[in-house]
Image: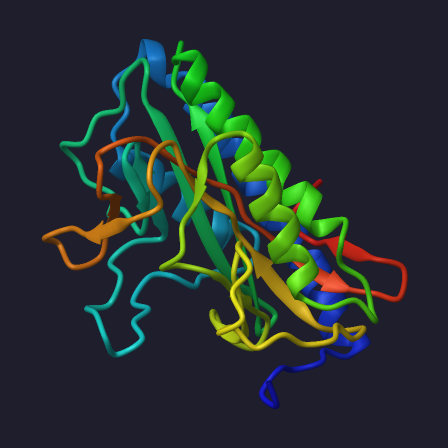
Length: 261
């Protein structure tokens, strides 16, 4: 884990400022989402709005054009995933959201040369009790995991806490995708699994580490597949998936959440 970086006070201040601005943009998107059940809004409409909001903050979309060399560059500001789509869904003009859908919005921003990342899952109109429980459990698993983090603790304390809570509620944690370091780049070391596995190298947390924590939780089995578009991951069994993400900084006292108001 020698590539795990420590940010200085000036860099953390920039991330704190950028994180609040990104959270404000997500709040505007949430307001728009609440109108979807009675209006015809496509995932591309939401993407266009998000891009305006990000530029308005003085930031730049960090997902648009991003690629790690193993897939084609991502074409949009938002990853928008619906129902059984897990992450990396591509906004489309003809993909109109409807009552009963669950919608995942993942947005990244570069602000003052530092990167922030966050995601939320929203209900469109009235959804099933099982879908609402899935959203609630995923959201709470993130908060439970974050409470385990502070300087001196091991990163695996987060992973164990998230997995335990999710599985206690009869859902499953995705194994193929994990959280990550963030700050100088969209993705940095370390990898941050939402489950415990010895193959992931553990590390002692230190002040100034910045992480993007993101439980991805399935209604059914944890297996996922890559869609024909080469970008979107879906549940293998076709059941629902939920996703929450925040950027945090490790301190002596705990983890400060940078992407919340």
